[in-house]
Length: 236
Image 1: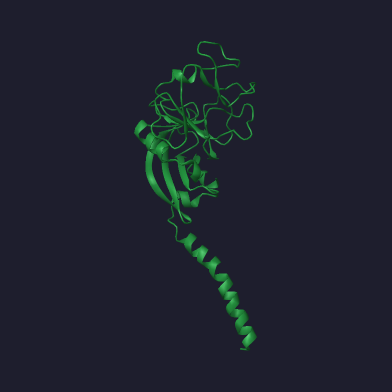
Image 2: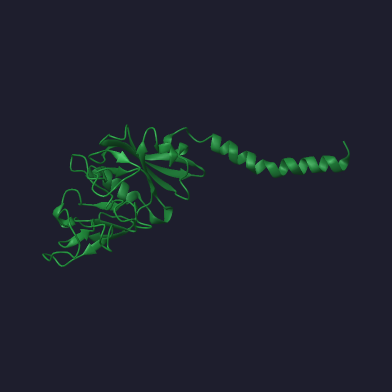
């Protein structure tokens, strides 16, 4: 073989080596759910919530961390509650369904109880704290404080957050319908404490498991929560 052709062949093999190595590393990842999702973007922390069917009111929740290019389990699987009418990719306000898809978390966590040691900003819930559920309000799907005992300037379908001491003992806000906020598409989707029954559209866990997740989450690691059924979750 002429010397020039030999040198070109060696250079071609050398330049292809990194890509071959990446493919081999990806192929070596465990064949777990987290490693089969369509895209987890730049997340280094992941929570998966998998319901058996779209009508299921419970799901399997598991937490994962990314090491190099692979996801590895760190907590769970645990039984979580989801919406009274299951999960849906086409959620609407008041349908009592948990939205499916891949979502981040908003930068503030909330709770009626004191900060349990989370790495996010934390706000103690008091009388007059609302998550606005009125699609006609300019504050729709946002936190809003109104002086305790004063009627809020938006339509309400429930009491303020302080009236839910069990569910809202601690919570993280799932970034569903937040950027942009679409009126009527659904509001107040939380990861909160279990009340022992299906939710109105949130995801809930018993307090010990919830605290483990909330304390583990780190804003700098761009955590995602991916929700779906066994048949659909790999699309996200």
